[in-house]
Image (cartoon, rainbow, N blue to C red; front, side, top):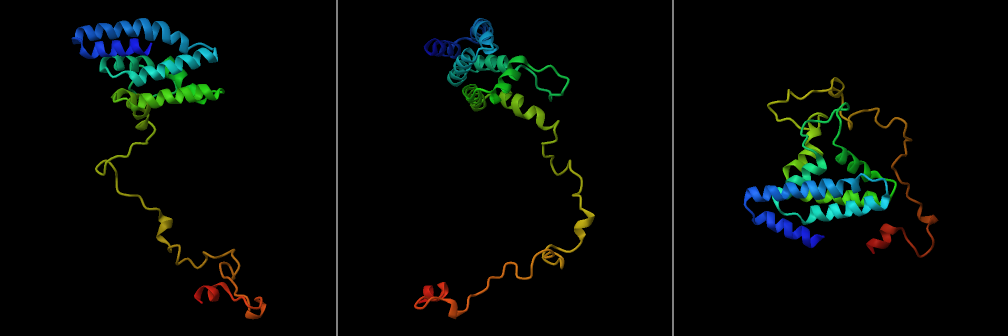
Length: 200
């Protein structure tokens, strides 16, 4: 299988753009949608594990931008807008993400490896679809200084600093953090304190 995939990948890399697009479309219809998708959506753990491993190997091996683009859109869908609770998710993407936390450790690891391989690929849609499309909607993006207002100050911060606060040690005993030195009479004969032994 991987030899056949490598042949197709090389063929698409070296072909005229029209031929490359036609081959990529045929691979998407016959292999991705016709063979791989039904296996990925099965309930059988063994079939899902095998299909996920084949898919991870496929993602790892593809170098052709045309085939990779078709595969990424097949797996993740074309959506680029932020996800909202009412949206219908891309079924394969949602299923693959759910399998990252599957009851079977093998399926979880295979799914995580698949996403690891996807994120290693130099394809902008992978990062945008899996990560970036939700950052702005969830306020994770850091705005530039011109978009931000002046820094807000907490009115309670205007008080004393922590070191200057006279009530900082409330609740601690007076001897907190102070070690008592044992009297020289309590040390066994012939042995001094550690500081004396070290300095000798």
